[in-house]
Image 1: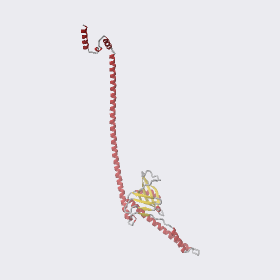
Image 2: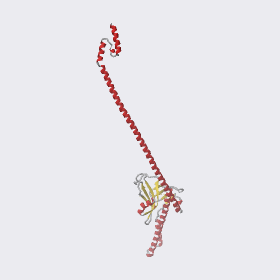
Image 3: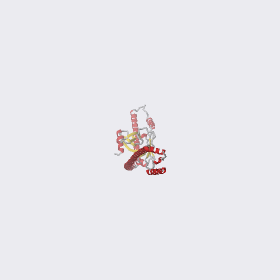
Image 4: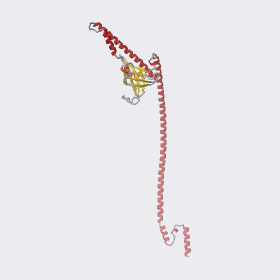
Length: 331
């Protein structure tokens, strides 16, 4: 079941209508203000559908249907009768193009179909549906006129008398009624290719349907390929991110180890410096005690009796020589 069958089943069948054609479209110029709750911007798909009622008198309707992203249901948004459709503009009468305009009573909608073939199918079916609608409506008006004439003739035959109006006055009344009646203006198709509104419509419709089917298949293949590429790209990106995270973890671990070793060395140097400071303090205290010992007092006495105090600090051999010299001098 294709998408048109889903739209017909969900939107038109419950309202006793039958869909003739649907085309997926996008706006050529997005409206600045939107009074409808459309959810996320651009997160929906729009379809323009042509349908006819099953009940008599048959009505030809143009309906805007939307499918919002993340939902499988279709929603009817706006609907117009064919009498409100003033003009259909095919934009380019020389070649197939996806652009077309719909001029309604109060607005002009500028659309771009999903493909040129889809647009051609839509305009071709809409044109022939409009022609059949107006011909059917013109035939009903002719039948109503004949019925009125017959009823007036029967009335004249039954109530003939001197006070009855003449046939001339009745014809003038009928002509006045015809003049006062203004038939509705038919939909105008401009800038449309002649093959869409010509006689060879069946063959062209088959050709366009084949083109539309091939275009849908092409879009599906491209979408699947892009989806598979996206998944592969996501896998590659995931692997790359995993490698980057692993490298960062290894780098951070190595840096942490270096910081730990530097901290250990710093603590060791601090301990050695403390030991050196303690040793220096002990040496200083020892030297100070040596200077204040009794030998230092004897040195001070020798200096007062004429001896040099430096002899105490000299070696034993030097002191022996000094003693010999002093003995010679005394003798």
